[in-house]
Image 1: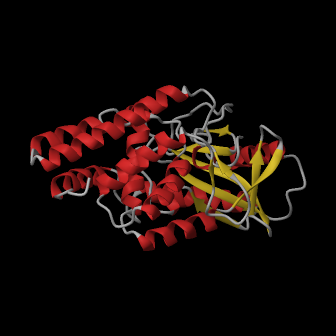
Image 2 (image 1 turned 60 degrees about the vertical axis):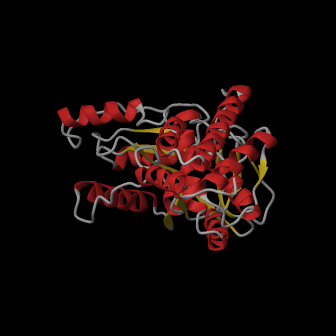
Amino acid sequence: MEHQGTMAQDALRNVIARTFSPDPGFFSPEFKWRQQLLSIVKNATAADRVLLAGSSSHGTSIAGFSDLDYFVVLPGNADFDPASALERLYRTLKMSVSAATEFYIDSPAVCVRNPFTGLVVEFVPAFRSKATGLLIPDLEVEQWIPTDPVAHVAYLNRVGSATVSLRDVIRLLKYWKVGAVPNLSSLYLEMLACQTILVHPNQPLLYQFTECMSTLMSRRLRGLPDPSIAFSRIIQPFTNHSVEQEEVLRLVREARDIALRIDAAEKSVSHSDVIALVASMFRRTSIPEHVLAWRLVRTRRDPIRTNFRNRTRGGNNHGAYAHIPKF
C-alpha cells in the first residue's frame, strides 16, 4: 500500500465530511432547548458540574448517530447504592423537566430525547474520586466504577499531536461501525486506532484504516487495556452481550478486503472503481429508523406540546460509557 495517491484520499475525505453535524447556532431553538435542559439538570441536582463527555467532547461524533453524553458530577461521596443514585437522578428530572419530554433510564444514564434531532442526551450520575477522576454507577455488579474522561481526551490529544489524521481515521471507523456493527464500542475503536496509528504515523488515510481493520482481525476482538488512564481497566469490544463474534469478524474482514481492493484500484488509476468501492464500504450506514421515525413525528406535532410516555428500560447498551468493564 505504499503508493496511495489522491483518489482514495479524496473519496474518504468526502465520507468524513458527511460525519460532521451542522452547528445549530446560538440562537436556534435546538441550542436554546439544550442550554435550558443543562441548566435544569444542574439546578435540580445541585451538581458541582455537568461535564460533556463521549465523542462530542473530543471531536469524533458522527452526525445523525452520536448522542450527547454528560456526567452529572454530584457533591459528596459515592457511599450509597448506585441504583438509588440513578433512580434519584431520574425522579429529579421527571419532576423538573416538561412532561412533553421523553426520558428514560438506560443504565448507567438517564436519557432525554432531543425533540429536534431524535437523538438522545445522556446524563450519568458521578462522584469525584481522587484516585481515578470520577466514579459512575455499575448496575450489573452493583458497584461504583472508576472512569476518567479528562484523561481520555488528553490521551487523544497527545496521539493526535503525533499524527494529524487520528480523528479522521476514528471518524471513518465509527461511520463504518454504525452501519455494520452498531454494538461495537466506539471507545474500543478509538483506543485501537490510537495504538495502531502510533505504529504507522503519517500514512495515508486508507493505509491507516486498513491497518486498523487488520488489527481488529488479529486481536479477534479481545478486550483492550486502556492506555489513557493511570489505573488498570480493560475496554470491552461490545456494548452488549447479544453479539455473534464470528459474524463481526466476517464484517471486519470484508471491510479490510474492500480497502485492499480500493488500494489496487488506486494503483491502476481506476477512479470509478475507487468511488464505487468506497461507497460499498459504507453502504450499510444510514440514519437509524427510530431517529427517522421521531423526525417524522416532529413534522406532524409540536415537540414542546406533545405528551410522550416516560419509561425506564433495561439492557446493556451503554453508549459512551461502555468502556467501563461490563455493566
